[in-house]
Length: 130
Length: 136
Image 1 (tube, rainbow over the protein chains, first blue to last red):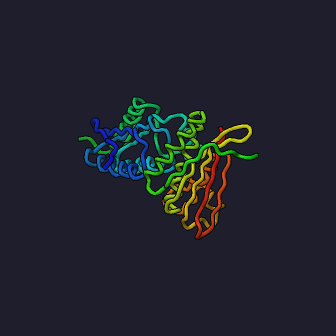
Image 2 (image 1 turned 45 degrees about the horizontal axis):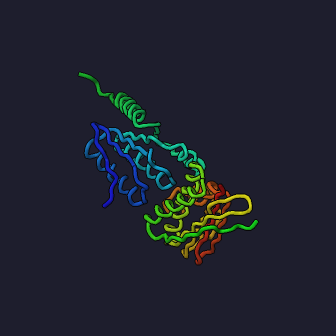
Image 3 (image 1 turned 45 degrees about the vertical axis):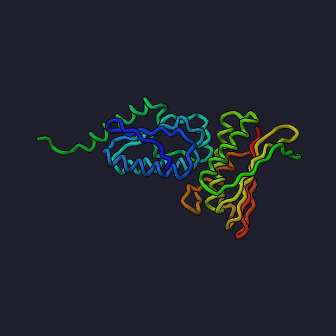
């Protein structure tokens, strides 16, 4: 079956969506990512959509679901590389992708992921030191 | 003003892969007319929303992709038809947030906003026909 590859890099998972996704492929990616987060105990997911020429409500919803599911599994998600024409169209379509963190490119996305994970680790670390 | 159809292509919508094929064909037509990238993206995105409606709500159908022109300009016209259950309340279906399935309810209203002309006719029990046009 056709699949979008998920790369593991340390405590992060990297996904580059390079094909024009049909709906089932998008749902498979959602399933695969959640499985991999748990398997590798990943803390962050970076999704590169720089080659996507279109994001419709279905793909937008999938990105939102991935971010929500990842959060429940203690991982942060950042979507990077959205083309300007895609951003313009999404807003006109009525989709603002609330709840999804974005960054302009992979490098900035990694910085965002690292800092948000550090923050959440510090916030959550309330155990007393012995 | 009379609209002249320069080129017309009909495609089936039976599977989610067909939605991808429709998007690609619409992109090709928009590029052939010299649409800019933003305009291409808008009509392609609208086609994706409507093709998914045809599949999910209409149980499949057809997409007609036309290159048209009138006296002053050219454009891409898309007609989506299905023989599905139809829409009882079109105004409600056009409202953002209204959804009959698991969508976000942006399909029809979103496609309308991404187009210059929008037309829908539907009756319960006799299917739905949605037509959009985006001028260059």
